[in-house]
Length: 192
Length: 424
Image (cartoon, rainbow over all chains, first blue to last red; front, side, top):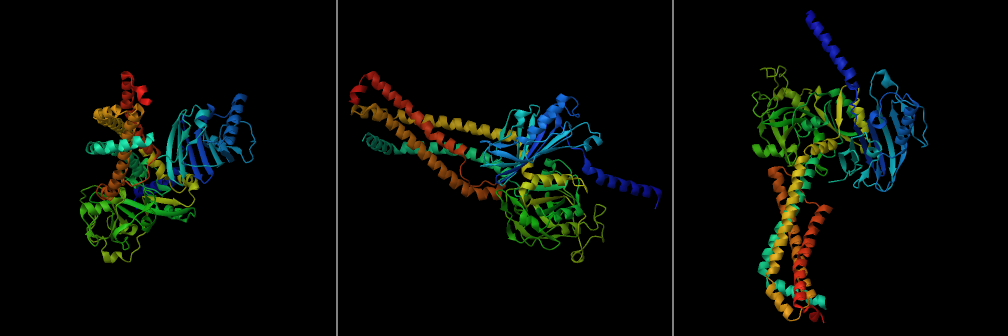
């Protein structure tokens, strides 16, 4: 075996391992003005995941420095933990469980709501990322939930920085998606 | 008493002019059918498109965009960027939350149609339209290494029968110069038409895909190294990689969580997409098309209603003599007005009912033919609220139109000054 073949083999092996080690670590896409809401609807229960760059919700992405910024982080986190991010026309949904992940820091803040809590993801800073994201998971219990009726979200009105909210849903009638622009609040999973 | 009089008079009047009325009714029926037909088609085309694949909760492939993955796995447009390892597929198979997996391996073609290597799960679990399973029009699903099942479109356009032998080509493209001539495949079955890209592909086993590429390592067949059918029988053809997998999830509420886990799979960069979400995004991209159809519907609504008004007004103009006689014999303006209204609304209702019957009969007769010849799947379904509203607009418009001559009669009677006298 010639030297070049050996180097080639090593190189190939390195590339392969590098590929398998780091490929799944691609940093997530981060686009200001865009946010994503994923809903899984089953009977009267909604599981949702909301992801958004922190900028859309706070107006900054660094760790909260001033008291004002810390208060804003607390307020936003509390709101995200307590408000059902989707609701029926009759406002029949209540938050059963909510988890808010973010890297914006601020004081430790408990929630009034029983199960809600939030985490500060410190490891984001280790990666040296200058961007930070919010990720909210909620479990909602809704009375008279009918996915063929219109559902609404308070997100686009509460956070004017969200210009496009991609909504994806899964329910017994299938899958689908829609896009809410600023000011649009309702969508119909069952629309033909 | 008055109502009964109006009714008898209206019936007599209608019967008297039955030939003209039949023609008017025909015109109305045609425009109502057109109106409903365009609206129906608009929703059905969207429905047909968005249910190209149904029941599949996730499609897993190498990392790429969701539209790209959807296009090459479902629509057979474009090519895969990368494959996924067989070991990854095996580990997905072990996940108890996944109810079933359909492996898909692409890359070869048969006269311009994709060759899809898969297994029996494709027949069992693939769904399209409103949860419709695949069915074999003739023959059975492939069993042997060199068995092939044809999509309905392929079998029709190339006039293949069960039992024939076909030679698949290496790589894509309509005219391929390197064919797998040493390993012909036997047609064991033909799928029933689905109206989806499933019709435009041929299906072989994963082992068949491997077997026909033995000896093809350099990209062309090396004589003496390819397999014969006999040699292939007792060899193991476990592939190293597949292109993608369709996944069914037991509890759909977990879809997003499993999607996220697959996207973050440490072993290999994967993308899991929700086909329904990708399809609706694709449809949104083609929003121009839907808007064009909506525009056509709008024009058809306007022209149909104007046509309706014109026809009804012409009809009333012809009745001047009849009305004059009725007025002379002492019929009140209210009675005359009710005659006009009854006639117009009755005509419009008759046209609506006829249009519905013609539409339903036409659709149930034409849909198997459309599916077989054009791959268009348009099924009978109950009308939506919008369609009922459109249909209801026809008698309402007729009612409004009838008010015009009715009002004219009333005004004329005021002018002549015997309106009050007739009422007494």
